[in-house]
Image (cartoon, rainbow, N blue to C red):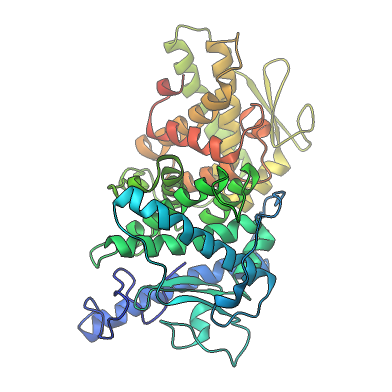
Amino acid sequence: MDVPTGVPPHRVIGAGNTGPPPDRPSSPRARAAAVRRRDRRRCRLRLLVALLLVPLGGCGPIREGPTTEGGVVRQGVPSSFVFGTDSSEVDGLAATVVTDAQDYWRGQFRRSFGRSWHDLDGGFHSVDTTDEDAQPPPCASDITELTGNAYYCATVDAIAWDRAALLPVLRAHYGESAVVLVLAHEIGHAVAHRLGSDDAGSPPLMVETTADCYAGSYVRWVVDGGSERLRMDSAGLDSALRALISFADPVEREADAHGSAYDRASAFQDGYTNGPRVCTEAREFSGEWATGGGPRGNRDVPTLLGERVPAIRGYFGELVRQRGARWNPPRVVASDTAGCDGAGIITRCGGNVIAVDRERLRRSTYELGDQAAETPLIGAFATTALESIDPSTRRARRFSVPCLTGAYTGHLVRDTERASGSDLNEAVRAVLSGDTTSRELFGTDSASGFEEFRAFRSGVAGTAESCL
């Protein structure tokens, strides 16, 4: 999803321009700095693939999430038009996606922007990066520049992907919808290029999230049944989102960052919900307001429970009192076994008790971060607060509880020194985590991760009052 060496990271030149890119750094020092930035971005994506393939010593196992979606292909497209294809199943999937996405944009581009769409002049290129004799695709001098990667090369208006170390890995860990998402993102870069919004002054953060937004608008069309070739259900949509945030950067990263988990999932959701025109509008990024304390190490479970439970209890107690209700704070009981019904890390039990499975909480902290581990605890207190405010109904709980969880998380990263933008990212991963059910995380009936993130995001952007 990054631009490889030889292509300017911000501006890409229109097809047919054979001269040097006009924004290429002019001095040796500037050129070296640009190469270092590009190399760092390539390494991030390759590191993701390495993490998915081989658990590293000293690191927690990768949380794949269930890939329970069915196949996404209704009517496949032969990959014969793809340069370098081996006619494999994964290339067939890719060929179907890019054909379908171009069909979508052929109609949507005129409806949204009043312009005619033209298919990619340079076509599509599949490369087996394990084959030493393979020819490099456009914008790459060597096939290693594509390892574990996919990119849009605007110099020749083409898209290339690694069929050996990217697409199969995404499919194995997140399902076929992840392949749809990644290639829709690359087509999104082509959309931005045709609109002229990928100029040299645009930071990578804006360029990447804009492509995410366009990808969201296309995926909505697929989910709604507009595509004759592809289908995607709510499980597939959740898997696609989990794949997307796996490419995210920390909020505190340098200026060439591609966007945090919160920013990238938000951009995708904006395009999905509001259509492609919203993707051309100015965006606010979490780095502008997630100004709490900087990155810090994970707290252990005793510290997490000892420091955070009183703060969470106080926050929701004040909310209940402001609504004129009586607050009976739940008691938190930690043990080395599952809660009262053995269901999850955090379980709300009878007698106004929140049971915490210490070992699973420790494992969640190790794998996803301490804020991810804290998020279901916030959800449990939010559920109790909501019941105190309005004990007669469960109607709004599916929205209100994740929204209140987001409001508290937003309060932490905006107004205190107890959390940072990285903690916000960890919370997003918890909300979208494939093995965390709605009941476990928020105490609500089953809802999709996509909808829970929508509610969580509403709370982050608003206040606790706005969730009620």
